[in-house]
Length: 157
Image (cartoon, rainbow, N blue to C red; front, side):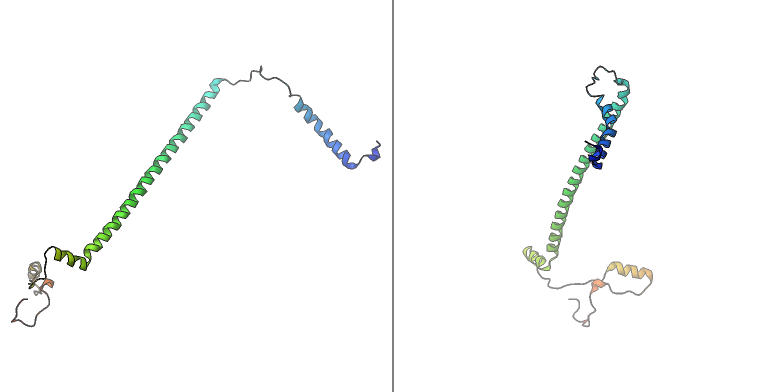
């Protein structure tokens, strides 16, 4: 082959192979070499601190995982207790509303023998009278005395 028949592309490829050849020879020099007899062992004394450090890190990670699991169980138990307390609170709210219902109160009063009063006596509040007398102000009727009546002949009814 003449030099003119070789394309520039082929020349560039041959140049690249020629540049790579010394690196390949250096790598091939290690192929087939037996290193089993070489004494490149580190002393066990140098590995002891590394092993102790690795053991401490492993124990720390294990302790953190156990603490995380314990915390998750505690949160789960607290959430279950909170849900139970919410349900109990709802039941108590319903019961309180039932007990305050006037219709329900009337039914329970009739069942227990209560009846409408025949007459009602309203008396003045003794505490407020003694307080007002001590303060030197005019005596006012108590709220429990009820509204003022215009018919004095009938008395308290």
